[in-house]
Length: 294
DNA sequence: CGGTTTTGACCTGCGC
DNA sequence: GCGCAGGTCAAAACCG
Image (tube, rainbow, N blue to C red):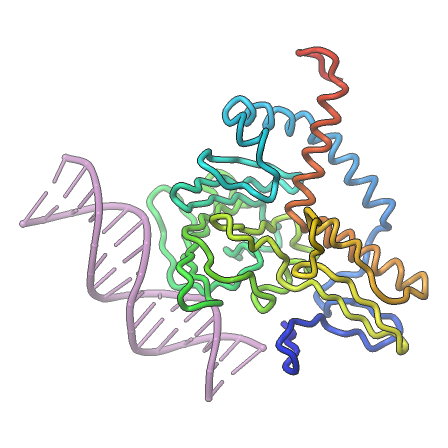
């Protein structure tokens, strides 16, 4: 990670060359598809997932009608357990009463050995154990950012599907999510499909770890403001993502920024949930009567 | 060299 | 009380 030692704030890697690629270091693959293609793909995916999502939402409405009716996505607190499934395939089950959250996320085949779920916090592994009911070892992590932070998590691959990671979070972070933690949360596009950000116990730490993108291009500076730069009244990072300061000059640079923005939004659980809700609502609107599927 | 991971040993809770 | 399983500790190894 990159820390600005002069002011203590997090800073993004600065591209000094004309091409500005990669924006976030060598690990980022070059953009393989255009934004239009991405949008088409996402739309297609949304269309495909809409029925399943609707079923899930319907189930949730019947189980916890008040929770869904009154709680905005970013405030998944309350007395009722809440399960959500976003377009990423990540399932989050929260049991606020016990400060325990279970996150299921699909791991990339390339990460078959990894037993770690990137979620924006900095974890230190302190143990590993093979449990009786699962051939895959369970890893134990503690929050490593603050020594006094009581949050722990357990990560284990699903016995049924070894590509499914099951992470159990216990406790509540007593600090803000820190940029130092896991920068790749928003930047490593290759793992975005499996990332899920914990918002343990409703601490308002739904901010992204580091979101100031500062690019120095031929003497021009471009800054994307996110996370703690969130404007008052902005309900999500998606809205805040619209804050772009600086000058966009070349089409290449423009494309890079658009791709980056798309990547940021794709990684924003709030945005994804809002998008999923909107899609579900549209689907519901177009169903004239019960029992009719498009 | 300092932080992180690994891994065997130890502790604790629970069921019988 | 005993055994088992899950959870934690801590020293050594590893890594950047």
